[in-house]
Image (cartoon, rainbow, N blue to C red; front, side):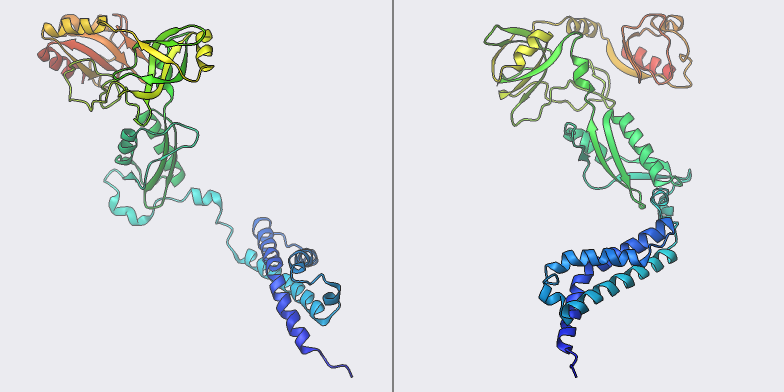
Length: 408
């Protein structure tokens, strides 16, 4: 009578358990997935065949495919253990798929709202303040955010209705950030505690506004002099002939570019001696050294610059600019500049500059109008004033104050 090889059977159980872990996991996933999402039970025979195939791959590494082992008690028991494990795991996955509620979907997760624990942070208008958490990240493929803009977004906060779904809160905050900071792109993720993770990209429209029509902006590596700024006229010395054009950007290697003029809180350029709170001034020129200069040139000349890796530049003397001379004349007579916003309840809304007789009635002159969609320089008398218009006006201090009250 042949004795049962207990030792070989135990080794086969051990090898079967090792080889069956991965096939059993796949069988469980298939059983649960099909039952949960489609309410269909996959036939056990199909899962067993799949498990046997997977066991042949993973088990082969342990010698189960060896003919000597496969024909022994050890190999036979190992294969049976694998098949039984797959069948059992599939049935358990099918049962779990049946018992799990199907209300948990990606859509329902995105429609979840802020935690009810935040009730104390909801104001009397039913709104809650959303604040950033962590660093404000950059978006891949876009330029880096300037440090001052990054800090301004990080320290900001925004109020929204507390009963909105998280997806709607994220969409509204993204739209708000793009509008407030003129960003090119924004990505916002808000958790149930009202904390926002923000990634943003600065607007790339600033350069295009500085390039004259019909010109191209091209950059070249050069030795930058100290004090070069946007608007300077430079000549680039090329092997096939020099080219000349205005500077639209300059950056010294190792120094963050900061050639912007002084700006107010809303990003508007402030003329000299504007009668307004002092803005945070930025360095208007380069510090000198090796760097890159961007110049606006005709297409043919721009193509020649692109073909050159490094070139010398010569900066032309600016002389006096007419706009600064005009500002100086106005200042000598005691005039000041101020930005005035037209309020919704102002009597100026709907009137033209000529019909309101702004110069005659208030003693001030409108130099420019800034709107969301456009900027009007030296507006005519037929230009209509709308609520929200930002007017750059010039006049005496008392006249400016009186006009500001009318416009509010």
